[in-house]
Image (cartoon, rainbow, N blue to C red; front, side, top):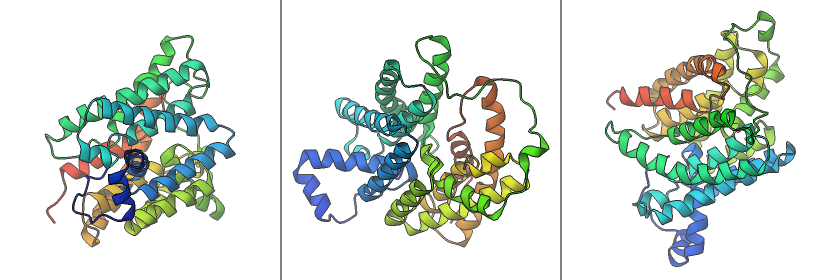
Length: 327
């Protein structure tokens, strides 16, 4: 989700990519995976890809990793076919929404032939949605972030209710919104806090696994030490705030209150601002607000039987970027 930096000097890998089209194709697909967490770095993308593969393997759901890769490849080929702008394409800006979409579809829809039709269709349409959203958001001078992923995922998941051949066994159960019972917010032990912090990192890719989280943190650190630090800090803050507010304990330890604040903190604190005390405090406020908005989004999404995905991250980041104070 970073803007491409054409001023960076070419290293050996970059020179090899310039001289070999297959390597360039691999490069910008890895960058696409890295851009899920704002890292325009193929090595970061490789670690993120390994994290998803590991998490899917441990969960016995390799279709999730395969769907993410398939959607990404379809998006890349679609972007080439549509002759999109070269710099954003090579920076991975046309692929990260598709990668998330493929993972989400395979997570919330049961394996079936039509799942793969959805993955291919979603990967292609994500490019169009990304291009359209980018043009719209340029009016306000901000990034579209993962809005295309959210929009296309919600539409495809909701459409599964209208077609009997698209099973959706893993979607949330729809029903009236009710406050959570007090016993669902039991005090967390120290191991619960640690689990919540670690799993929050991996839930950025819709996978709750400790080893996957460590691989993601390594990939983040390779691309940006500041981003890795902000991710850990945001995970800690989100777990504490969610617990103090009485969120359901299983949601906290499952990382479901932490992954959106992590993305918000990285975006507001490191990507769209120079890291420092002023931007750090601004990112802290945005992180806390994202926890609150996540609770609101759960209430909004539940009656429609759809997951919140990264909606709270997008809404809060847009709000804080539009109101960003002068440096």
